[in-house]
Image (tube, rainbow, N blue to C red):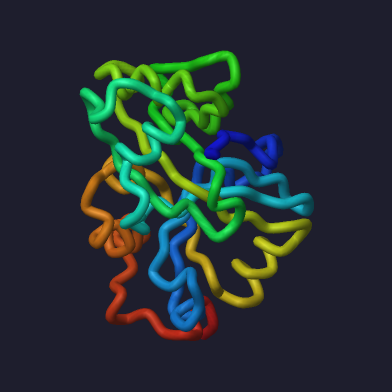
Length: 198
């Protein structure tokens, strides 16, 4: 059974909520190698939650997910990207989408992006309507307390970058990591395991 839930609420002046985290070479030998994560919520010192947006989920397919959720029609009138959103709670679905659609349980991430915790958005999408852009992610990534800050500052694990619709919602997952690096003028060929250290 897939449910849609939020573990954290995004509120803080110093928050990275709405930013991308681009995996650096320090994560090359981990499950997060070459991932791009959209931070849906970040409260400095308290934790963070995000979705991997560039890891295609081979199984189940979108049709299978909709069928398990009892959402008609199957096949849907409209298709959206389906990702492995992270290693935590792989049975939970998270719908990241443009802010031109909102429901009772929608959470505004930033001016252009919303996360929805109900199946209404999937019903609208399957019926050919819904938000202009959308992504369904199964599972999420999360950090406790100061863990994310430690990974960024001390371990050089993540490079913060600005999001774009193409990176968030594009269907070509294989190019998103390089696209995200390009937004901060980083060439993957010049990255080392010591990013950030002179």
